[in-house]
Image (tube, rainbow, N blue to C red; front, side, top):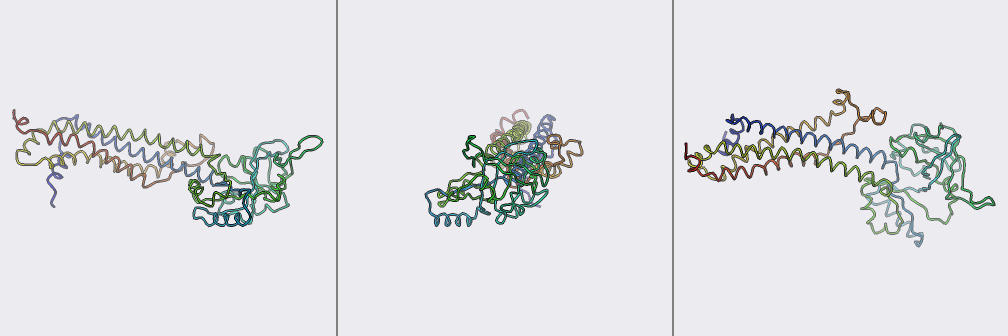
Length: 410
C-alpha cells in the first residue's frame, strides 16, 4: 500500500526508540494528559448537562413558564385574537385559564406561606409534570364549588395533613374592611391530592379550581383573566416575548423567580469546563516541548534528508504528523473513555462505595447524565486542533535546520 513519504517517516518516528528517554517520557505524559483532560471534561460536562436538564424538568416543568394578562385598554375582540395567536404559536404547547396569588396555608398545628394557583381541570394538559407525578388523587377532582385542594408532598409533611384533611387558605388579596379592621379572605379546603416532583416547588405550590380561587381572592368579574402559557422549551420565553401580538399582554415568566438558579448552574458549568480545559492545554504544551527536544535529537536525520533533496513542506509535515499523532491518540482515547465512564458513572460510583446524592439528600437518586454529542465532538476536535497548533513551531524549526551546520562534526 502506498503511503506519502511524510506520513511514513512521521509514523515511524512515533514508534522508534529515542536516545533520550526523557523525550519519550514527556511524549507519554502529554498523551496521558490529553486523555485524562478529555475524559474528565466529557464526564463532568455530561453530568452538569444532566443536572441542568433535571432542574428543567423538575422545576420548570412544575412552575408556570409564562403568565399573561390582557392589558386593560384592549377590547374583547383583540383579546380573543391575541390569545388565539398565542395558542397557535409554534413555541407554545398550551394556553389555559389561570389565577395566581400569594396565600397562607394553615392546618391544625402549622401555618406557612404558599403560592395559590387556580386552574381549570378540563383544559389542563394531560402531560403536565404535576399531573404526571400525582402520588394520591387526580387534578380532575378540583371541581368548582367543592373547595378541594392539591398540595405537594413536602407541604403535606410540613403541615402534618393527609388525604381528606381540612386546611385553611388565607389570602390578603381578597381582604375586606370590617369594624374590627382589615380582615383577609379565608376558606377551608379539603385535601384531595398530593403530588411529588422532587424539587422545592412541592413545598410551596398548591392547586385549586380557578372558580374557587376567584371566590377566595374576591376576583371582580370585570377583572382581566390571566392565562398560563406552556412553552415547549422554557428557555425560549424571550423569543416568545418578541412576537408582535405579545405586546397586548402584561407578562410574567419563570425567569423572574427561577432565572438566577439557572444562571448559576450555567456559570458553574462554564467555569468547570474552563478549568478542565486547562488540563488539556498543559498537555498540549508538553507536546510542544517534547517535539522541540525531538527536533534537537533528529537534527542529523533532518540534515541528511534535506541533503538528499527533501523539501521544506515535507519536513514540516513529518513533525506535524509525529506531534499530531500524540494529540489524536490522546483525544480519541479520552473521548471513548469519557463516554464509557459517563454512561456507567452510577455503577462505577456504587462499585467504589460513593453515592453523593444519597449523602446530600438522604435519597437513593442517581446522578443524571445527558450526552450533548455536539459538545463531545467539540471537545475531541478542539483537543486535536490544539495539538496541531503545538506542532507548528517545532516543525518549522526542523525545516530551518541547515545541513552544513548540522553535519559539521559528523
